[in-house]
Length: 401
Image (cartoon, rainbow, N blue to C red; front, side, top):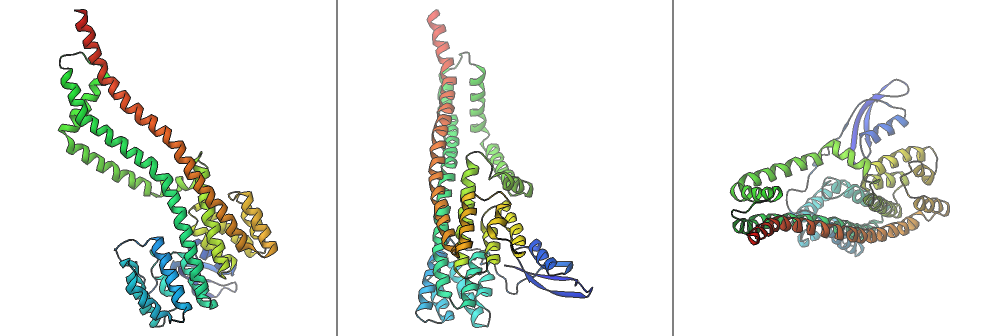
């Protein structure tokens, strides 16, 4: 998690200066307020030597999972951390990750802690990864933390694959429909147009002929227009208003909202279970789980719950107030708190929702498939009908003579 440097006034009215670690500036200010500090200025501390990991190949979850397993195996065999990291940097296939591991080994050898060294690569190692490494390092259970982290990354990869499977189908169908439409306008329509020379054509057919001429004769304008459209759409999607709108409505959308909720809850439970099992405190585990769940609403609800938990309230009651978490999850958390088996129960809940996500992704594809096929069939059939009607009209007129 990032560190924030602040200036403020204590309860006694004295000027104070220091650092606080939190997920974001809002959380940092809440922590300081609870400590009795009135903040005057606060800003994120720039981590010395902070790196992005370069512009090479993207580091995938599978790459990180393999690295964790290998790192755990080497540390359990008694290999010193720096030597293990140096060895792994030489045999890691992903060049971006290999370079990061090599530099992390140099940092650790230079006196930095393992967690701080990993934290300098925020684009490669997320808050969950750093929290698990820090917990294992401080508790002397690095091997167990790495094994748990590897399992978590594998399950996260499976969850993402299910999501991609659900999203890629309608996208591929849409691309196929566009290519089919363009192919017909360029290759098929001119043939029909030549056959209808001198025949009376309807308005729809005129539009199709005009579109075909435009694409064939002014293709460069169409390409430019598509590029501009893609750039504008991407800019809108990445804009803050669009992000806020999406985050506020994605969990309540028909059909898709249920799928998104299950996905977010599955990720939240899995992360929270992994962190708690790794020895991370409940508050820190909740902060990381909320931030990596994939929903701003869930993240805010968790932060609000943390304030109540720090005041002595139970985790289940604090999370239940938001109304965003399924009753089953709240009930299991309550049982886990009472029995002291919260990580195990959260792990079971995560498995349940992950299976639900897999089933939901299949159902989503089953729902989209007939709609997509009907849409493509209607598009192709409508165009062919528009092209054939003038021909039939011309043939009927000729028979009348």
